[in-house]
Length: 249
Ligand code: ADP
Ligand code: MG
Image 1 (cartoon, helix red, strand yellow):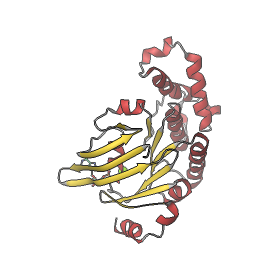
Image 2 (image 1 turned 120 degrees about the horizontal axis):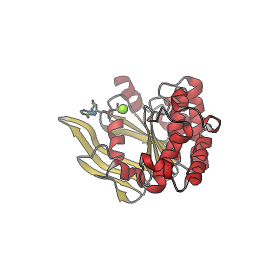
Image 3 (image 1 turned 30 degrees about the vertical axis):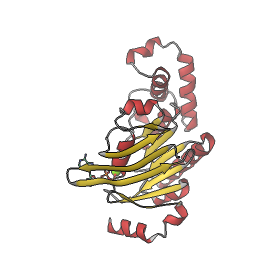
């Protein structure tokens, strides 16, 4: 039994079957990539995992617990963290403050802006936040304002915000989208390092094959709402079904 189990999930928008009998099993400690052409259903599936969408039928089980109908913040609290495609950070705050917010929310199970100034455990939260920034190589920029960061650093900041919550499962939606090659490589190295050092379970949605082949232990290929192939990355590249889906899509 995987840490995350998706069983026979269906989701339609009107007459369109966005997810058509989807099964997925993600083992603890593994990096599992989901790839597929535009419109395949990847984002819809991800949204079903974080509570933004509720499947029409089927089950989603995380750590033995059903996620169907559970609110996004509760899913986050039980250990699922997501890095968004567009970084959701607090642009006017410093990097340290950005990471302290989820660190505090994680400890207290809630966050109120006014809690900021009467934090009981400020030193503890600060240490945690600093460790999160160090994890992604941003320690020396902790006093900078988030808006002043490069695009790549903003995404690393968001990753730090997720890591500080010690997620059991980290979901990444196209973590290298819009990055230049050297920044992409830096991100791959960082994610690999985090995967190994923390034994971090990850689900990565990705278009960039280079990222998938250097990072993933296992790959699920989706097309037109269905899973067409599941295999190790080395077996995916030459698979005619995958080539057809990409050429056709
Ligand atoms: P991917 O992320 O793989 O590109 P999506 O999950 O975004 O694919 O979309 C799958 C299909 O569902 C597409 O045909 C898309 O147009 C459709 N779709 C996604 N979200 C909605 C929605 N909220 N309402 C209607 N159709 C949607
Ligand atoms: Mg998408």
